[in-house]
Length: 223
Image 1 (cartoon, helix red, strand yellow):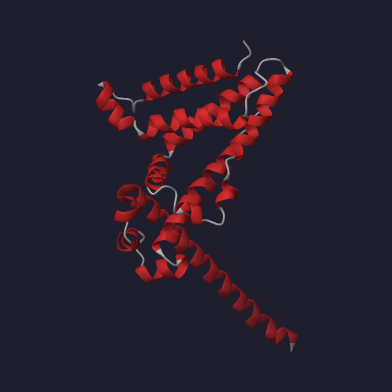
Image 2: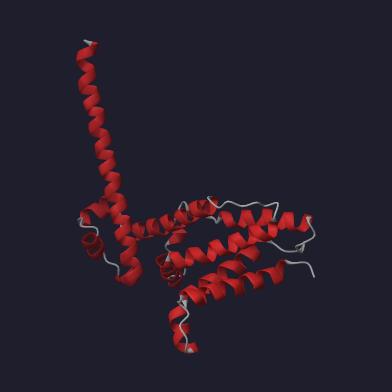
């Protein structure tokens, strides 16, 4: 009898596994489509209909998996933060060499904004809404940037080596790096017009990154 029941059970398990994989693939496809649509049209203009068309899916599937347009928007932002956190945690750093490690962190933050313009656009959108959507996320605190903790270790080592000022906080240094990188990327189009020169070229990005490195090191180094 055991031999007869094993095959149907195994087949049932395989069917459940296939359904779960299909469901996960559908959710990921909807998330990718929603990211592009919200980045292009904003929260208000990014309708469920546009997202379902972009995902080659159906409106009902969005409601089935996410419950509402707002819940989907929150999931999109959570996913963007999750990916950035994963990339931060994958950094290879030698904290015993604090100056070198800090350069790596600066390059990563500015490079991530450049490589992920949709992330910048989505954050702009959510800030226009005063963060009211992400404030409803039960996982928002889970995505606090690991970079703050990394910078804290770097600064501590720099202080021990008498290279960095002791009164600095990791949060302030992180905000300095993030602000200079984020502002440049989020305003590069209007600033290009205002300043009369393109800021979105490889040469300009390299120049700005070096300027940020110099600025941060002037801030953190001992006099």
